[in-house]
Structure formats: structure tokens, C-alpha cells
Amino acid sequence: MRDDLARLYENLDGEAGFANLDGYLAFDVKGDGIGHFTIEGDAGEDPGSGQRLAFRLEVDQTQLPAIIKSLEEALRGFPIQGSPGE
Image (cartoon, rainbow, N blue to C red; front, top):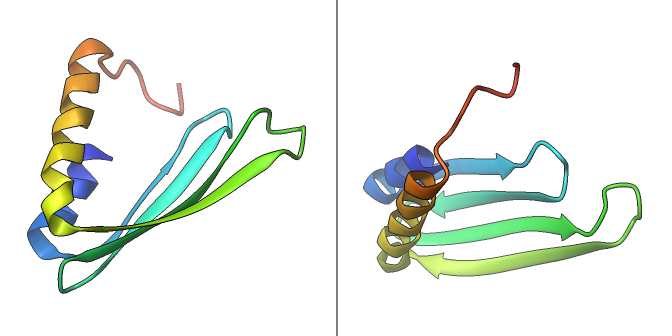
């Protein structure tokens, strides 16, 4: 996700997606090519419960560096181990 957002910040166009393995959170980030980004997704308490929160956020390119930095800090505290296929 961090790398995809960095690419979006550089290009301003394209798409990045995130979905956790448990199905509690999923979202897509789409750039329009001129510095505007839409984040759309949903979050849920339990994938089987049917209770979901759909959300849509509008951000611009000036907000991406702080988001990318936060992801880098999270990765330092919780490094990636393994891969989804393991």
C-alpha cells in the first residue's frame, strides 16, 4: 500500500487498493491525474455479521505525504512477515 500510494503521489493518476486478509477493511484510492484522490471502501465488525460501514473520502495530493509517512512508521513498528500465500 505504501509503495502504491508513493506511486500515486508521483503520477497523480492510477489506483491503489487495500484489503486485509480477514475481510474487516477494504478500500481503493483513485487519482484523477490533477491531484485529487477518492478513497472508497468499507469496514465491518465481523465479515459474517452483515454490519458494514461504507465510506468515501476526498483528499488531495498535499495530504498523501503524511499518509505515506504514517504507513512507514506503522511498518517500522509492525514489519511485514511472510506473504498472503504462506
